[in-house]
Length: 255
Image 1 (tube, rainbow, N blue to C red):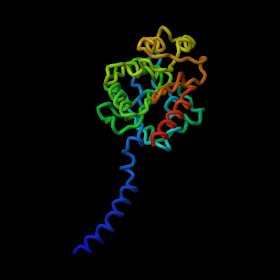
Image 2: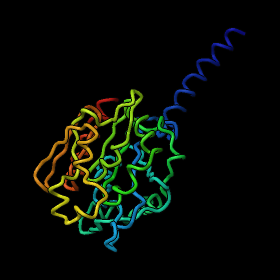
Image 3: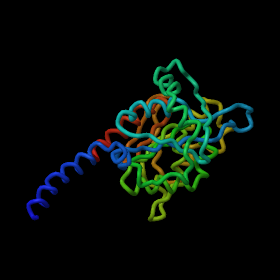
Image 4: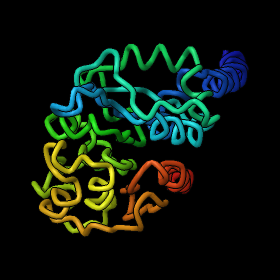
């Protein structure tokens, strides 16, 4: 009898090990294999009569850097379809992203915050675009999700106007996440150059400083990325790729 039990154990242990290795679902559910991209639902550019939304390259370029390494889920404050801005398909990365049927399915059906379990994610990225200025700061649910991911040692990143989503993230110690941290984001000079200083509900640079962040600024519309621990922020669309590359480096170091 003992001999039979021993043989069964020898057979079953390798089988269970192989099953855990080849099961793709179990791998995809690991926190270090999933990243959450946050998109705006807001489509109106103040009272200008113009449309806005998420800025295409600020989703496409980070996606391009991370897609071969991580499962990427899409969420927005209200869920559902999200509006797009900066629609430039002459950029080959934008084109690949936009014409991917799976991406279109995700953009038309973003998850709502109530569908997200923060423990499943090793990172969260706030995609920029002027639309974010109207709805990102108002979403307490997304702020709570980001705080949980960050406090679980996950990476929080944002680019251009995306850092508007960082403004109201509070940690367990009741401090703002960005208090005392070096942060980049769309500058006052860039907003003025875009002619939208009087259109946006607030100036991002000013608000980041009000929250206690150490604001870091580079020349207008040139790549400028800041890493402060596992918080990574980029100033403008030109910074999206570099920001994602730094996020990837941090995530790889954690493995």
